[in-house]
Image: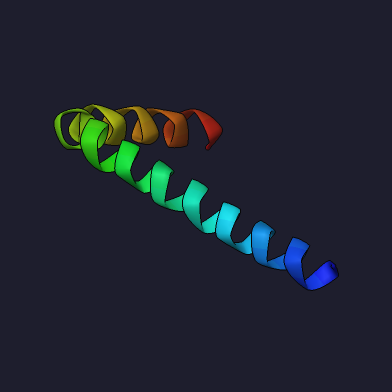
Length: 47
């Protein structure tokens, strides 16, 4: 039973990761430069 749960957890995690990667890839291409600018601003504030 525990093996089944572990397998489900691993598959679910991989599926979520893949889904996130797809979203990042689809959305990230046009917005990547904007995102990097935002990240740099966040870094400037934290310093």
